[in-house]
Structure formats: C-alpha cells, structure tokens
Image (tube, rainbow, N blue to C red; front, side, top):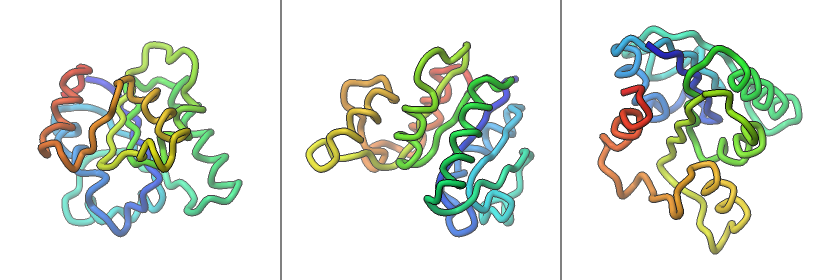
Length: 158
C-alpha cells in the first residue's frame, strides 16, 4: 500500500472534520503521516483512534510556523511518500508555492470543503485552481460526503 502524507493548517484539537477520511485510508492498509497544528491532541483520534505517525506544526501565521509548513511540504515532496494529501483552504497557497515544479511521481490530493471566491480573491482562486487542475473547482458543500473517497479512488489510493 501507499504512504500518505496528510498536511493541514486546521487545528485538529477542536474539530474532527479535517481527519474524517483518514481512518478509512488507514483501515485499507495505507501508511499515514498526519502533520497539522495540535495533531498530537486530535479530537478525532482521541475518540476513534487509527494508526498514523503524528507531526505537530506550530499554530499561527508567524514566520516560524510558515517556515515549518514549507519545510514539511518540501520534505513530503522529496521524501518517500506516494501521496501528498492537502487539507484546508489555507494550504492551497502554500502548496502552490511549495509543490510547484516536478512532483517526482507523487500524487496530490487536495481536499477542501470550501474554495476561494474568484470575485473576492482572484489571485488566491487562480492559485487554488492551478493546484486542483480543474477549470472550476466545486465547493465540497455541494458534493456528497463520499466525494473525497471517490477522488482518492481516482488517484489509486481508495
């Protein structure tokens, strides 16, 4: 099975939603690395544990936190991961920078329940669309809950 590097800017200690797809991937035999703020205090894993390696990313938008996120993205890109699973809208801009250029065979899965509005945030929308590789990303609010599993299946990790 594949090694999945999951990275998010969402605080995992106060919301179970960001990790909702990971237990199924772990149960399917994938090796999972979770990198996020408060990852070691995950609300989801506190009540429904699943096997994974945990990396805490600093909270906030200070330079130290931003450099750590970029370091984690680059290590995922050049490391032994098969899939880089990006979660949360705030990861799109960072990933568009950190993952530009060759991916060295890595598959990118971008999961987000909401997308940047093209009228209010045209640059962010353009970068997010470029990351997603689709002409017009649809909001996860309008897709069935199983859509993330379908996306994962399409890239061979379902």
